[in-house]
Image 1: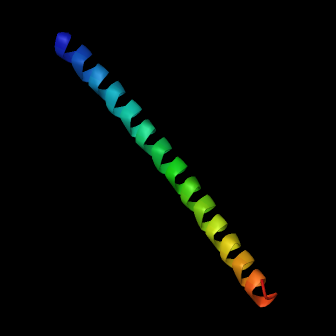
Image 2: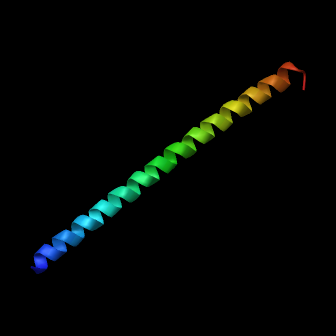
Image 3: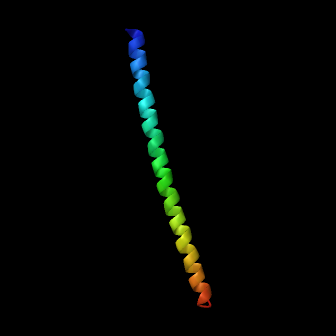
Length: 54
């Protein structure tokens, strides 16, 4: 019985760890997307200022 409880708690731990890692991955992807968007808009703004002579 004790081995069954340990195995069950290990399964729960593994599942929680997997969920946490998935959440970190999702957040990292969202941050990367925001950074790419910000970099693109910054590049476009600098191009616009350059073309306007500023």
